[in-house]
Length: 377
Ligand code: KG4
Ligand code: ZN
Image 1: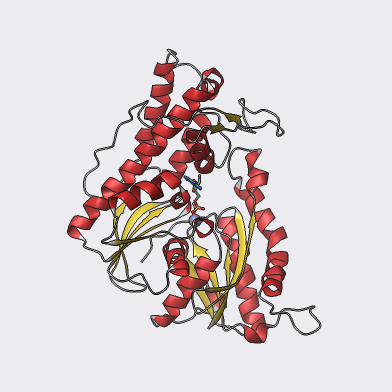
Image 2: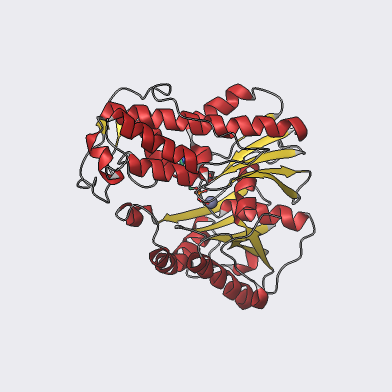
């Protein structure tokens, strides 16, 4: 079964063509990061307009890369496509609107069944793209993205139970906010990971912004034990990350001997590259510890054959290394390939494939709803 899938929930316009849930015929991701580096974060109205500009060229490119153009190579060969899948929730409303309107129109125009897919299901299913046969149920999935931090139990395909969730910020959001405190560029996750390795880039927005041509400064890799940060004691399997962000802020103020009234956006000017590397490493390591401690607790009452760690933050090398140490063999640990950790449409095609296998019926394109928030179910 060949599925054309579309993802536009945040700031990536993505189109993929995936065969039988794991064979990627094409995978186009048009990222808006370059636009938003200048703002230090996503501006929803600009994201929606950028999706509008990118979606049709991305669609054409997806058919071209998959060798699915008609003989004169001018048009997409829709006869090869069995179904269309699209992210319909959660996400930015304007961004979701562009992807879903495109998918609905194409479904009507080419008379194809349409499958709306939950974004977090897609993140989990990114792991099946790389290991389609090896992942066995029950599965415990830790979703770590910019908007969500959840532990989800799966007893079979398309059966999801949320057993833990964040009570405030998501871990990716925390990475992004801590990066701002340290004067590191958007998106915060990759720039904190680099800073922890001793490569300090500087923000291209806000008061700490320098010119674009500024090269990263290199220093010694950060010491993850230099600044001890607290592990939140949240009951059950829930997370909290807003306190960790404030703990970094307080630790920076203390290190610099500055009062809490000192403007937080000017703190980064006062830190040396080595201090930034040490703060980045200490924060990254604490975030990793919080995530893995909860995953380990979750396993006590929810035994699993397989663990999946997915979502944008799952690209993080410290998280991958520590998880591999903690779960060396049983249960088996799976990550998506790093290029499928962040938002992409191939994972949407995979999630839709397993939904269809589980008997999910297509949605009437005229009735497809979008929603900025909704729980995986
Ligand atoms: O899943 P994703 O691409 O989008 C959402 O669905 O939110 O996740 C984006 C998040 C951002 O907060 C970004 O800073 C974080 O993933 N991220 C990382 C890394 N790469 C991206 N966090 C830590 N380490 C990374 N290497
Ligand atoms: Zn995502």
